[in-house]
Image (cartoon, rainbow, N blue to C red; front, side, top):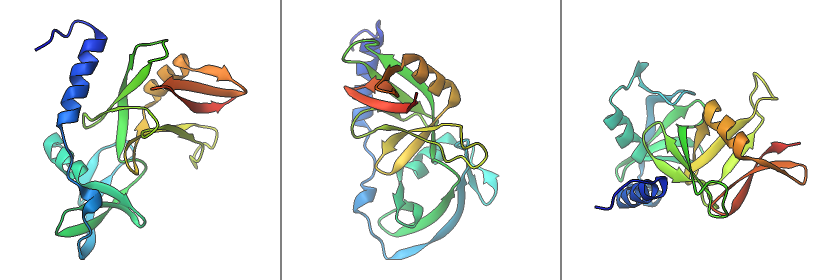
Length: 187
């Protein structure tokens, strides 16, 4: 095994490990049996079943692996059934971020979710910012796409780090990852 003595070598090891992990092909499953289940994902990323928090991270990871977003909402899907659940905001929280090759053209922003998933912001997994918070329409709500249709709310502390990395460009405030510019707001 290669030594992990630099951020880049650690990143490559994590990227290789993430590449070995495969998720079920939920996009291919369209079971006839459909229903709802009393599972709710709160704004802070905690999962609840019938009002009781699911504290076993392994169980949360298994459930998250069969989560997808359909036209009618978020569902847990298997080859046998599809169950609608409630998600208050985004199903995940991006509570950590590492900057690989900071300040170079190869800069990548590597986010870590509350369930340990790693994702680099890029063309397939963009960073987006909305201003649709009913409590405070001025407050930015930043997200990074984790999987198709599934986003992680970027934690406030991580968003502040993004802002520190950002720059003004043509009246927009942007941050770069994997050769892509992502708008954080306007100036």
